[in-house]
Length: 160
Image 1 (cartoon, helix red, strand yellow):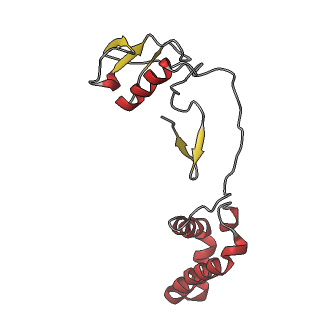
Image 2: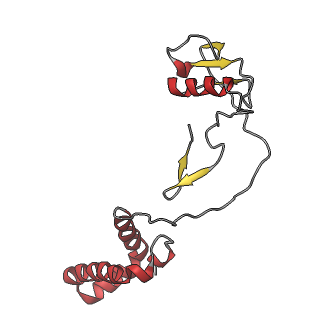
Image 3: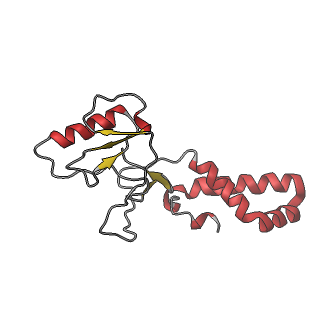
């Protein structure tokens, strides 16, 4: 019953495995506590036992092509304005390469915002390329949670 609530488990493909795992749990408790003890334990702790079986299954879980769930949850027609803490403010094209994470780079013309911080030198180089490329109209250094994309059961994806 508890495992039926888990959308990742395909009961058509996994019915034998589920039966095997549940039988192993029941046999374990029955051998230690008898039939009545096993039934009481299963009844009282079915949610916990189901979660432990599910957690064990997830360790061996893999996605096949086509296992993608798309869902649009609320939209907005603006970008998240970021507030920055920084030590120094320099132009995007300054020959600055040290302590990039503590610097606010300004002078951005094609960016959605005129200033941005970067996590690495390659990100800074990409911003410079985007600024000088004639084909680029606008670019965005997204804020954390800007796109609210999740993967692998709720982990937040933050694009570079």
